[in-house]
Image 1 (tube, helix red, strand yellow):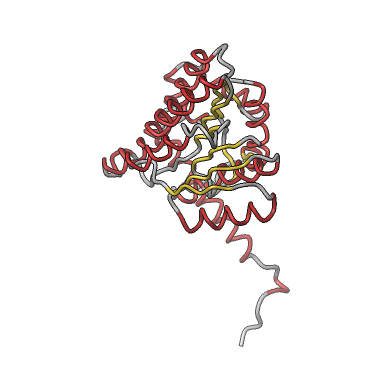
Image 2 (image 1 turned 90 degrees about the horizontal axis):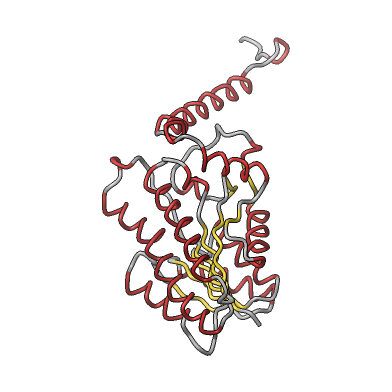
Length: 282
């Protein structure tokens, strides 16, 4: 039975990857910083799908813990056929509002972990001439929205270059570039996204399903939904001054302001009552 290792597997897309892979008969190695939540998720999946679920608590920004996960990928007996590099998180505040130590820790998770784990997995998989690597990137990588966007740009380009190097080996590399997905990611990062239209959002099950289908076919860039494939195409060819203007810090401030205005208008409408609904005066 095939085995998949999923990082960041206790929430968001990582959790959805774990459930869908278990549903298709994959044994799992689940990686996350939160050991209690990790063990609870593993128990739930075992109960429902009757697959083997191994837990590997690790903070991928810590070198020794990252190396432990990399070593698991090179196990010659309990082999991993699919690596899903999903771990990641956003930071509250702009570049200058956040301490440099926090930025470094984030980039260690978003970039160094992807580099180290992809290297360990690819070398082992190439020896067996079988396997796949799925790196969760983002369409944010085509924007200028801070260090997070820059790191996702790196993940996309790195995955493309890895896919080229792996051609003919029986091993593939795919980058998933979703747009806005309904998970707790933005809430955890303190981002108020209420100002975005409902049509902008994708559901996690759909994104993961499309990503796994594309990975199985060896697609290099997986962009779920026609609207985001179109947006991605535009983002790649748009003049950079235009991209900077559309994705500057002012964009997020305008979005937050719009969200606040919407909330105030909604509250006003809730408090507006017809004359026959007014309370009687004493």
